[in-house]
Image (cartoon, rainbow, N blue to C red; front, top):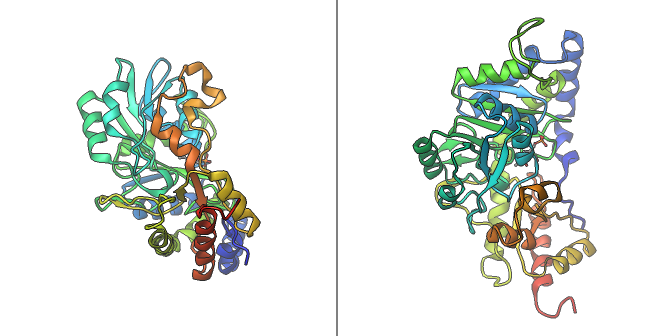
Length: 372
Ligand SMILES: Cc1ncc(COP(=O)(O)O)c(C=O)c1O
C-alpha cells in the first residue's frame, strides 16, 4: 500500500467541474486581478473566520508583511515571534526594516510560550506575532494581555490554522489582524499562490487594501508607497469553492488525528501532538516526536509512506539570520523539537486502512532492533 504525504489530486477530483465553470466565469468577466470574484471570496472568508473584514492578497508572506506595515511596524522596530515556524514569518518582519526577536515555544503545544515575552521586550518592540503552528492556536489570552500592557500590536500568523479555534474564537479574529496563506497544501489551498488578512478593524483592513494596490486610494492617486499584492481572481473563484468544503475537511483531519494519537498514546518512544484544552486543533500538520528520526523516515520511505520534517532548522539558526547573533542553545525547546519532528500523512481523503498502515510502520520503526 502506498500512502502519499498529501494527495491534492484526490482532494480536487470531485471539484474539477466546479473549478472549470468558475474559471470560465472569470475569463468571461475579463477581470483577473482583484474584482468581484475576490470581493465574494473575501466576504465568505471573513464570515468563516467570524471576523468583520477579509482582504485577499497574493500570498501568506504578503499577508504577514502588509499586516505588520498596517500596524505601523517600520525600520528600527523589533517584533517578537517564535523560531519554530516557517521562515516567512521572520522574513515579513525583515521586509518592514524591523528586527525579529525570538521567544521559545511551549514544550507541549509548540506555540509561543508567553512566559518568554518579558525577557524579549525592549523599548523598540512594536508588535508580537504568535504562530498557530500545525493548526493549533497559541495561548492567546496571556499574549494579548502582554500586548495591551505594553502597547504592542498582536498579529496572528494563522497561515496553518484555517478554522482553528481558541476558546471558541476563530484563528485570525483574536489579535489586531490575522494572516492566512492559501498555498496549495494548506487546509484551504488555492490552485496557485494566494493569501489574506482578516481583521475586525475597518481602519486596518483599509490600510492593507491600499498597501496591496500600490498605495492607491483612487486610480493613479498614490497616498503611500505600496506594492502589488492583489489576489488573483481565478484563485479567489477556486478558493470560494474549496471554502465550502473546509469545515468537513477539518473535521476529517481531526478524526484522522484522533486515530493516530490513540494508537500512539501508549508507545513510549513516540510523542503525539498535544491538543490544549483551549484549542480546536485543525491538524494542518500531524507531527510526532521520536528520538531516531532518520530511522523512522527511512523505514516509512521503504514502505512507500510519504513524510516530512517541519522544520529541520529553527529560524534563529538559519544561515540567513546569522547576523542576528543567536547561538545554538538559545531556544532549547525549539531546537529539540526541530530534531525530533516527523510529519505523517495528513489530508481529509486518507482512509482508515492507510492510517493503520502508517501507525503500524511507525510503531515498527521505533521498536528496538527492527531496523538493526
Ligand atoms: C507559518 C507560516 N507563515 C507564513 C507562511 C507564508 O505563506 P505563503 O507561502 O503563502 O507565502 C507560511 C507558509 O507556509 C507559513 O506556514
